[in-house]
Length: 199
Image 1 (cartoon, rainbow, N blue to C red):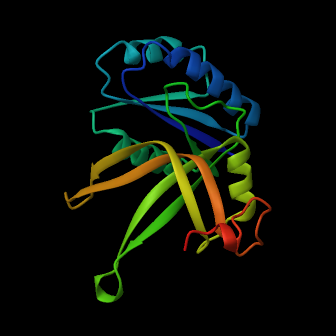
Image 2 (tube, rainbow, N blue to C red):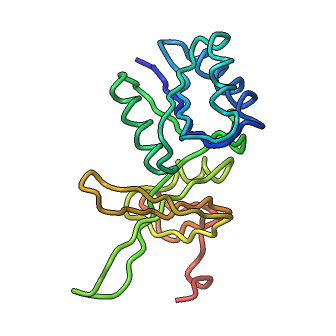
């Protein structure tokens, strides 16, 4: 099966939401197999909700979910849960600000950052997003446990509350460059050599 759900959290995107919906609706329509575009309006205070309601009838593969504002992280989690509950075979998340181009390669991975040693060692996780040729290289060469260096273009912190009410947060970065230092799939040509490594 190839049922794709593109999930899109939206908050105060009245200036661009219709254009973004048109672009991604065309993607899910071309995939078929019951694929859908799911827009979660996260309590927008502008005209985002009204615009979404006005274009639903002309976009049959569009589902709009209006919810109380809870922030980007919890809204993404709600979107993933909805897609899984609906039987999606594939779930792709994109934002509603038009920064993601539907024809551009993208990949995500979790980067572990260790601090300290022994019993004092702690591990923090960073969600890394790569685009274009960099995304294709990461998908081809990286696997769990590889050592990489990431130069970040921008970052944000997603915060939410877990089911027991405790606060949770994760740093999310958009990579400008990913250097492959040690990879199990074989070192790519642009990986740093021993002489180039600073340690």
